[in-house]
Length: 129
Image (tube, rainbow, N blue to C red; front, side, top):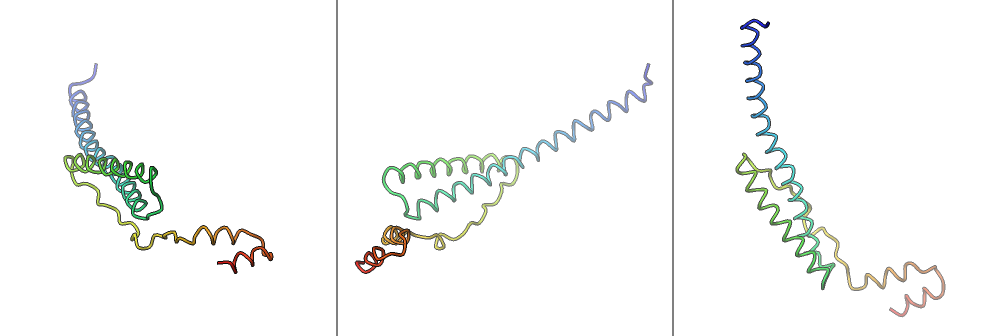
């Protein structure tokens, strides 16, 4: 039969462990939400950059805009949850949009002619431009 002092120290240790677990899980929840929020920030920035890049049009652009709006909604929801748990993650800084390459109108012509072997046909196509 355990002594009363060992039983009370056992209870104290269990209470201490429960308190520590609760505190750790609170910060753990915030860490998990902030991790998800950071990923959503990156995804939202990706879609914004792609849409602004002007590489897509029509149905593809419409789909990209839909996905971008969904990512923005995820960011808003996770920011709200993170704020209720503590401090939300800061928005990561990506590259400036001005550094993103844009496709020039002659892009397709250049890519087709540069794939041809160096022959008189290639020279003729180059002169025709």
